[in-house]
Length: 514
Picture: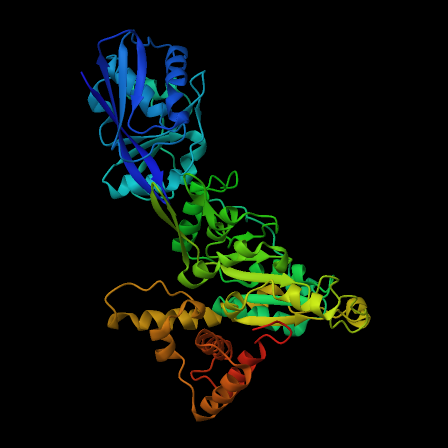
């Protein structure tokens, strides 16, 4: 008498339905698990046996075989404990088969039968709904996350005994009803009004936020580069519900959802240390997991002390910066993670930090300065739209009482520019057969640049002279056009004027090579 329970695995960022088949076979009492399980799944045998006994139920004294199908999908983690235990209970005749039909079951068991947190509940819930399942048993702590998926009944399970009583009809568990309370932000951003001086840097960050452009800030130590970068999320537009679910799915799979925050509603801000490995940055491992660039999806990746990052670490970012996704290939297969992030990098101009400083002389040899700056390769610099120098702040500005513009008022302008872009890309859709993934100007491809970034005669001649004088690559040419389009959007201009193009050209590198 075979029992069949449905569970779910996570492959990359997507859920895959898993059939948990439990049956008796001849032999000494014990449990065998097959179907490509990892060590954590194999250890379910002891957890399930003890949890069933501590739930007040008799564990069958037979040889039990558990098959996790399809066998081609690798099963990892302890989230199969609860479906295996439920399969054993059904097989032993304590519950009828029809009680678990059209239901997905996930959860780790402790020895006393308590159901613990499972990783990746959001993509599992999405897969359950996509495959026509109507109900899902999840750990009580994960119910708010699973409830983000509509049209799916979420039953929060505290213990195995509670689940048995519910299915036996003794004591029903009420389905989880999502709370309407406002969620806590992921972090509290620095307000732009707290930053003294640096008006031209604030302007550059406003342009970057309006179009989703990458930024490199170069300046001496203590000039305010890190403070300005940390203030950037405060002027980014609010995420749509689709973007929030997209980001939350990645954090769920990486098991990094903050406690009590089932849905991430604020744009991520990731700031990894320069000692990070390339696998930590782009993702990887034997079973690939999302890296920092994926955790910064739809948000900001801040790399402080930019040249201190390993050369290999920085170079692996080049393709994701273009493609907005990262594909990690292993012998067992390849997985693709979203990586549409906005890079904000900060660096000193030289090892001592004072090359070009107005007050403190640089102690580095010219060769040392050149070698330090060349740690950032030309192809990587070419992918950064805005290069901005951050000078030291004068005493008068630091000690003055003048209050700078708040992040809220800057965000209003950024949001208005983003709305213009959204309308433009949406209206251009009927001519295309597939839905667009373009959200901001930085996402535009060649076809969109040709359509929306036309230059007038004056702009054409300015761009022609800039191409020859600055020795711009084709990529740099297109990035300048995208940046000009953003500056025009901030000004509410339909066309790209020469003044917009001029400002975009001002953001090309001056000190840096390339």
